[in-house]
Length: 261
Image 1 (cartoon, rainbow, N blue to C red):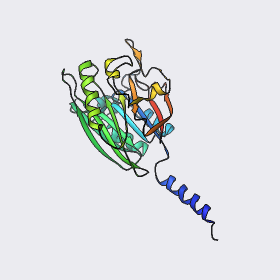
Image 2: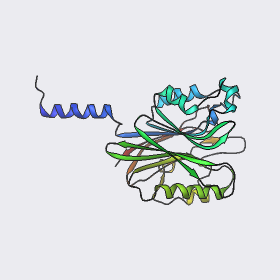
Image 3: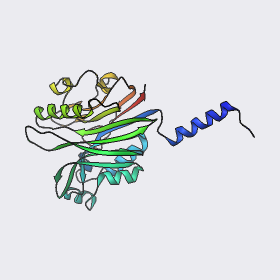
Image 4: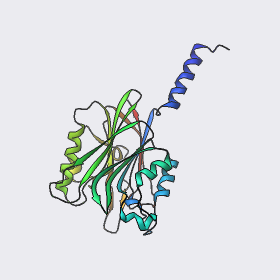
């Protein structure tokens, strides 16, 4: 049977959507507390994280406080464990670990998961005041014939001077690129901080745009918003933004959906 031209067109577009990424891109950022549940010491949280990713079905996941083959994980998991590799295996995603520093006979840094087809890069961040080394996990993807550059990071928890330098380094890294760019993570600063206000107006904070000031971190000493998703409004439109109250870490996962303009 010969299909009418307009039905053939609809069928072809449907096949393309099934094979590629959707028109709307869903991203998630989560500080995972090195794979341990902070409220039940010694209990792993990796299965809970994998189940959450399956449930939410994000296209890209940025992970902070990630251990890779450290001795710290042995009493929690029974052996040294590569958290990004295990999460990638359980979720069917492609994973990358961006080591910031050597730690406990293994590595510690950032992780990023994508559904498919990415190239990865590690950016090391400056620490002019000293303290822990920091990094960014960058994923470069081709979606609908457009290059996307998505980064996940964890900025210094001690010194504002480090955070200012690290924000500047990230902005310098992406400056002048024509890619569709998102960067996100545990940035360890509040919305009223100098670090926050050092970010130029051509970058938008998804939480602020959504008018959602819900806390992303909770502890005895501080509860507030220190995790962010930043995007360029010239190329992206924010469709949705949500902070999820999940008890798997001392941070809450953030999930946002964007549409290319």
